[in-house]
Image (cartoon, rainbow, N blue to C red; front, side, top):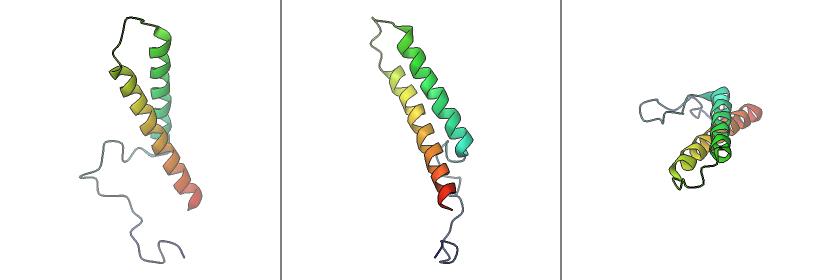
Length: 81
């Protein structure tokens, strides 16, 4: 039995309290993942040995993680439906 047959709400969540990435979709998720991976790669290859500021790596890793979650969940939802 599908969600529609059970009369469950399958639409998107209301946008008032949603995070900024809520409506990106799979293309936006892939774009975030690619940009986060590129930023991490650039930070690693730049090679500042005296730079101990890990907040740059944290921010780039967070963008990469959000992109992977968005792309993965939207593609999995499409495959499942």
